[in-house]
Image (cartoon, rainbow, N blue to C red):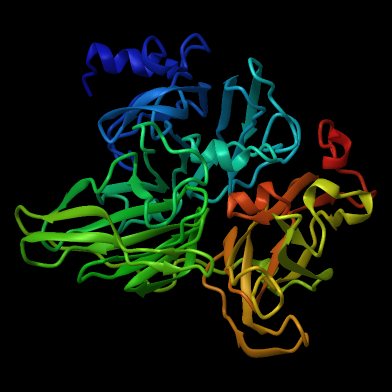
Length: 507
């Protein structure tokens, strides 16, 4: 691909935003691409020779949003959306992050199965304003392939920083995209998020917009256009990379065949008219265009989350045009379920999500505790190599004395899980009803938990020791207390690394 001088400057870090991998070693520089899996409006950096080296600068400046210069954002390298990073299993992802904002920050690689310690996915470290940190993420050879994303995860600042623009897509190649039926298809990766402008034309202040006044952006644009040929099958990867919006997404007159969930190929596919995306959720789907010309709309159909009702909104215009072609299908069964689903259960745990108004301010809890107040007695300890079963219950309802009904998207770091049961749960009487046993079709790292309900999942703690977190992915909830800590330890009880202090150690 021939690059213009401006594109070359962007790719090598000279010029706008410093999007760079220059000066970091021959044969390992990133490249700007426009090939498969590349969001059209975002810079894309792909690993070479087993390594992706990138300089990221988090800063506050005026940047282009939907083609309009917009002040008041915080972005990586002055771009909205942030650069998309593409790696492969076995690669090293090396990021030099400079913090040019006025607040503490760090990086989290959402959904990645990598070490939670040291210079990898360690959410307990902090980068001071003006400071720099070198991340060196070792992606295992057997890492799942699919759509992930990256964003800051410094407690109390996660929501404001993601809202302001600090989030980007991260793709691990392979998996469903490498299936013989899929490998040659045209691909699109869609990072979907909410946001909008204030009355002064600048990016709105965090929490100042309502669902009715928010705008939905796909790869930084409002209702962008893509094309499909009649009968063509494409592979789409979609991710909710915002702070609070829930989406129920459908494409007029079409179905989705799900081949990937939360960054991993499913072992059994399914077909559906709509998909629900709580914050943090991702799916990879096959879409086959109908056999007549015209424009159809990928749209947010609207979603009632309880406290907030997210209205219908257009996401992507799909123009069906050109010469007809023949679509593809995939088998129902793509792989075997993970063997750990049949393991003996080493421990069963029950966690309850709740919230209250205290002195006029909202507080959010896991088992009645705020993250800010956790001590050693509140840390869950799990043993490397074991399989556990967790039940996540949601008592955030008017019936249970909460200020309102509200769903919570539960997310855990380091290891995925498989949902095996859901049902209703009465937080007053502790009675379970409408129990539904589930035969898993895939793993996940984010699951929605309705109010007065529960979700049961199994999870296997493989490969890594260290301290990490689980939390509600409504980022305001996470920043205001709805987060817990777990330590993965070896048989000797060792695991926690340097700079992995409890929140009470910081005050």
